[in-house]
Length: 159
Image (cartoon, rainbow, N blue to C red; front, top):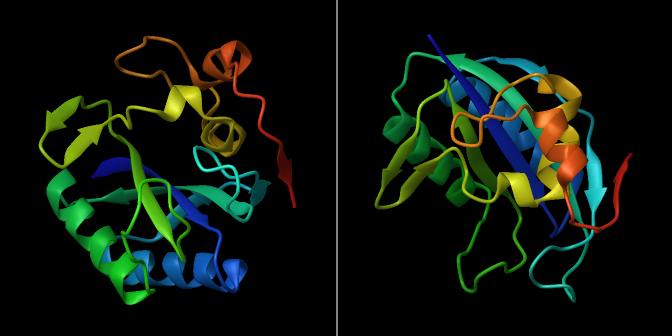
């Protein structure tokens, strides 16, 4: 079984409902959620005039390979009305693979660990809550260290 950390985000419509529905779909299609962070409300990153996001990190253990996990989360995003129209655009749901075990994957369409996780408070706050000691396989620092070194000043608050 493979340890997978996913980041969920929503800033359109009933954000809490989309997050709950995403978790329900993940548990049906991929694996039960073993741990989940609190939900955090976050200013939009990259496109600052967009509505605030809700974000949450979840932990799964699955037998699926990374490409299968990616395919399944893209299908879940589509089911929940995700439209990819602009970079950093608003969305009903966004599901990112943060880590897949300690694997380092860099292929077209799939980069693990997520290449921006160390730069984003909205990712590190919930990730630190459930996996502060996890070591980033590329940066060789744990999540709490990365959070401490973070320069991102966007407002991220637990709700």
